[in-house]
Image (tube, rainbow, N blue to C red; front, side, top):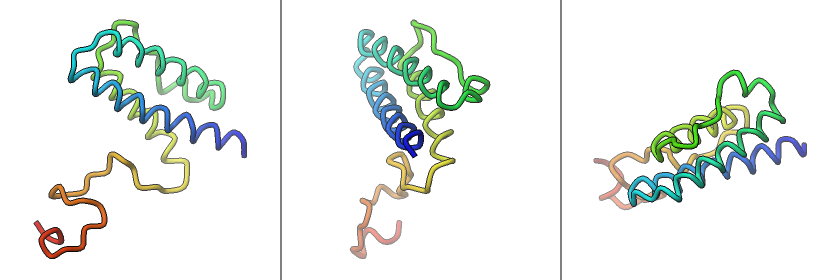
Length: 111
């Protein structure tokens, strides 16, 4: 059970890394991008210890990787573990027509 909890926490960290790297890309912040790369590689190392087969599908990012690459890699690695866990609504899920989640007004029901 502890293993599953740790994987869930690390998956949450991957989501945050993806969001942070998106911010770094928008602001062209190289220091933030380098930090995201280091964080991604650290999470990948730990996940590889917990699930050795991860090493066959995912590789460490180069120190000079772009923020966009970090975002994609973090989302992909997160998705790998989300498929195993119980279904949850992802924060990246497409809501369609930009309606807010849970919107029930007639205006938001259809596009």
